[in-house]
Amino acid sequence: MTTKSKIKLTLIVVLMIVTVVGGFLFWKSTKSVEINNSDKEQPKEEAGKAGSITGIECENYNQRPIAVMLAEDPITRPLSGVAAADLVIEMPVITGSITRMMAVFQCDLPDEIGSIRSARHDFIPLALGLDAIYAHWGGSHFALDKLDAGIIDNLDALKDPYAAFFRKSGIEAPHNGFVSSEKIINAAKKSKYRIEDNFSGYLHLEDPKAKTELKGRLTISYGGPYRVYYEYSPTENIYKRWRADQREIDKNNGNQVEANVVVIMRAESRMIELPDYNEVQIEGEGETVVYQNGEEIKGYWKKTGTYSNSKLSFFDQGGQEIKFTPGKIWIEVVEPLQEVKWGLY
Image (tube, rainbow, N blue to C red):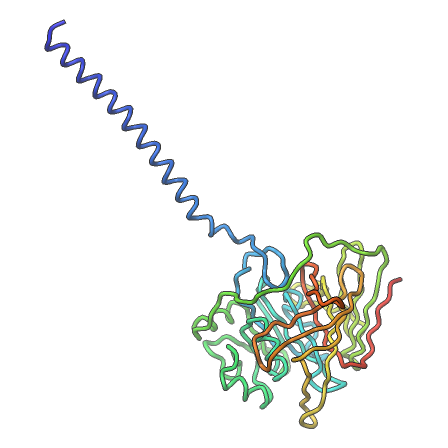
C-alpha cells in the first residue's frame, strides 16, 4: 500500500471514530436533558395532593377556601351547591330560632351556589380561621362595620365587584341571589386577593373504619323547620343529612347531602339587638362531641384571639387534637343546654 493510500485510510478511520464518539455524546446529553426536564416538571404533577380541609386528594388542593353565606329559610330549599362544600358551619342567627349556614369550598367548586344571604359578624372569625375569602349578600351593620374595616378579604353582592353575583328569575327576592365558583375566583383575582391556600389544615386519620355494624341517628333540636338529623350508614360509613324530616338535597344534582364527620360545638348565644340579631360566642373554648365512623368522641373546641386568624380546633378529653375521617365536615353550633341525641339501632 502506498503512503498516500495509508494516509487516506487513516483519515477515514479517524473520521469514523469521531462520528461514533460524537453520536454517543449527543445521545447521552439528550437523555440527560430529558431526565432534568422530567425532574423540573414533577411539581406540575402534584394535583394528587390533599385538600387542607377534607384531607382528600383533589385537583384544587391549593385553592384558597371560599366561604359563602347560605340561607336556611324553607322557601330556599333545596340549596344549590351545598353537597359540594368541603365544610359547612351551621348556627343560629336568632337565638333559639332561625339558623344560617356558611359553606366553604376548596376541592369541589360547583357551577352554582345559593341562595346567598347576608353576613353576620360571628361567622367572620370562623372564615378568618380557615383563611377563606368571604362571600355574602350585604350584612348586618355589626358585620359590615368589620368588613368595611378590611378585616377579611370579602366579596359583597350589594357592591357586586366584577359581576360575580347574579339573580335568578322565577325565584322570589331576596332568595334569588346566586354565584358560581368561577365568578367568585375571577372577582377575587381582579380584587387582588391571594388565591393560594394558607390554611394550616386539620389532622386526618390514615385508615378510618366504621366502629359499629349498627345504623344510627344524630338529632339536633334546632327549632321548627330548622330541625336537623343525620342518619349514619355503617356500610357506607357516612352521615346522611335530613332537615324538617326531609332529605337535604343539592339542587344541582339531586343528591342527598352527606358528611363524613359531624361536629357538635356548644357555644353561648345571646340577643344583642331585637328582633333580628344575636351573637354566638365562637371565640374561646367550650364542649364538643365529634361523630365519625359511627362513634362519638367527647372533648372541647378552642379558638384563640378576637377576630384572629387562629384555627377553630377540636381536642379530645386528653388534650390531643382530634384526627378527622377524611371527607366532608359539618359543624353544628348549638347552645350549651340545647338537646342533641345520638343513638344506634
